[in-house]
Image (tube, rainbow, N blue to C red; front, side):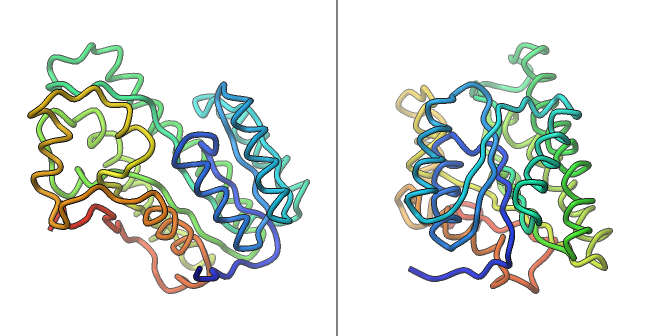
Length: 254
């Protein structure tokens, strides 16, 4: 396994109890960094993650945080800084479960909630975390988005539209905070054999088949292929990469 370098301190993972977030938390701890992560309701998964991190010889803390509550996001970031002394990287790996349907067939309230969860939630993360990264002399921000930003697929607007907002927020931070030593990048996720893609109810000919027909490599991505990319971008190994959106999609967006 490639060893990704991290300075002293801890990584923050927002959405660390889901299928993608848990794998990222695990790999970060295997790379020798402590981890603080959030979950929404699944305390059992959070406790399992803490045990896993400790088994890898690192420390972990977790908190139930609704990202729409700015004060709770700030409290979590500050408590992690108090616990670990320095925060060196932030990973945004959260997002709501999405219904796959034409945009104008969606319930407007669901559209508003999805936009809020992704864009407002990520904005609250940035407002809380960037000052702490500055205090530590810099660091990285890595956000999971979707490959549908680069190549739209029919009926996927509830994913691609909000995640496009996340991508542009990352671009803004990359441009505005680079002089403070802060990098910001996105990982545009394609069809990965874990997480939300495994929960989508997609009939034959539906969105999953549409994705697969356009994946150049002809297969879903393995979870580890995504985790490696996220942790690489978060690490010092990617110290001269900022303001980028890297598709991990098997050539779907080519």
